[in-house]
Length: 332
Image (tube, rainbow, N blue to C red):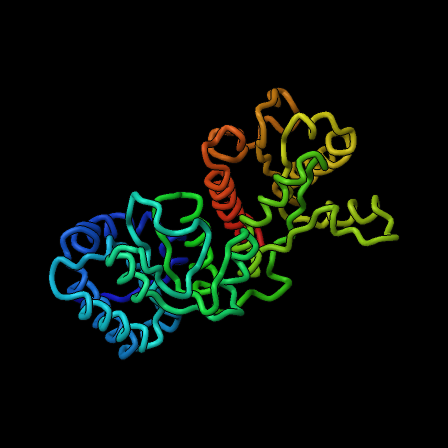
């Protein structure tokens, strides 16, 4: 069988092409294949790709398991993981459990003595991450605690924590080089200052795009002391490729947001000079407003405060913005 590995970015950008293939693989790779045999398959596959010179990026193995091999010994599984790591591949261990055995948002440097054997095995399989790296920088922005030296090991039973962990792992690996500065898109965030916390959370969730060199984000908090603030806002609003409107009752109430920034943003949108995306933060009657004809985020314009997990809502917003950037690329 003639096959080759593809990067996670390639899969995401061309999901329609890969969906059926991955769906067919799911039973064998994640269901019926014992851990030892699965690791042997991955090791041999990585080795074959490297020999064929078909794949040049860092390879990442996501190992999701309860940690208890149904064939082979724990020592054999640990040895196979060590062999994969020794070939300069990255192993990310995600321990599947419905019990809370770890502290949320923490990367450990050693297994806790009270952990079950499966968790200890999964920890041992994980790669070590350098103290100063894109992995740790990303997670520190989300308030994670990182032991020194930490392992890429996490417990899976919270979607928001898993989202942050997976983003941290994928971001620096999927982009070994960043685009040139003139290839990034300028993003302007229009918001009411009462929604400052929402803006901060949004920018954290756009960290992957920023680290990949795809966006340069601007908001009025970047105006330096002594600068003429209106001129700075106008300049950045008029040069932005993508304008994000953080919609709430405070945004609609703000004369500056509504009458000046919104008006200019829509003018540039209508002239195909920029794309404007409303992001609905809170329940508010925005129908009939000048931006009501635009597609809003999150999906179905469901306000972020109505989601059970705000992190999941912002993750969906970030994914929507990534898709919008694809439209912007076609314009260039």
